[in-house]
Image (cartoon, rainbow, N blue to C red; front, side, top):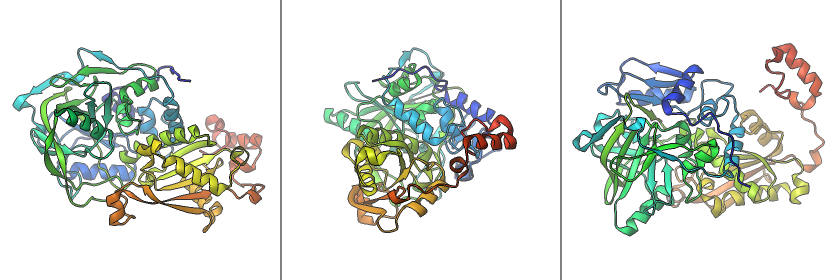
Length: 506
């Protein structure tokens, strides 16, 4: 049954979101002069890799009046709440753990959608630049990595596209590289939704209108990377998630609606015939891509923006950054919903960000043997089959390794994952390899032919406790001691601050 939730405190603007990060001590203003030529990228990459506060650049060489926010949805600088930025973006308490975020998103897939409300005036149109004034080179477009094929204008913006009949409005995050002041190019390929809509326009023989939104509400940035089914409007999904409609505004030169509080919007159309070499670029798997590919060309008709606009920038690479904190929970939520719809007794799911979003960990209910009548290896194989089924293709293709675990394992705790793998997964019989599956093409462990075909082997690890050892008792604090004693110990050690968390040390 579909649900309409109570409104959440989360559909805030991007700059309001940054103010919350500042209040949490998770934002650092970079007020010295910085260069878009590698320096901004280097600071952002260092910030992502060290879990530092998100850098906000306010003094950019040659680009007065513009600001850049780096790593705005990466891991938090709070070691006890690494997913705090994502949690805040989604209207949750900053301390919300990753698997709980996945549960919230999975539940929202069953909510009634709520369409946005179109307003007549919006902050994102405080300044309107048309004709020659709409010049992309005026923007602080960074060269992020040594070896990148160009300056990437879009790393965390949302492309907004309508199907020709306007029945489907898609939001997606896709990289875009600057060509010159009036053109850019980027990835539009395969079964990605932006390419599905592009083909609709191509069949009509018309260029495709688009809007590229920079600095959208943070929840919109998140859902733009979520593998929702074909035909689902991300704006409607967010309305259902928050329990209230988003506010959008019509663009000035194209028939596209964008989030009203956005920082900056680039309007135009995608040429169906013109192409340009794009790449290489630093990728989500942590390596620089090789070579270039001919990509379609976006032509610009207008730029609108707020006063003193803020552009979000991701310097993608070695995990963890937004490629992983956004895509990981979103993929896990979709696959969790698929697994439960298939009748499997899954209690939790987590895509491990440090794996580059290629490893999925799922836990099963303690009574899974009675409910499934399957062996542990049979259950593990079934979990993999559901994740790789056509119905889960947009989420499942990311995954090339899968762990099936008992419910006592905390999926977002690397110590728990390593313990379960080392002590419960048999070195020979605990591993199954399934060949000729859709795979993430960028993963370097595959050979050249597999990467080009985007097909190869995947593995599932059976990390379930063997039936003859179910009587074995964990000696962990939360498992081995009576709840009353755990409560007393925590009160004695920490006062009431930690006594209400069920006796764990989380």
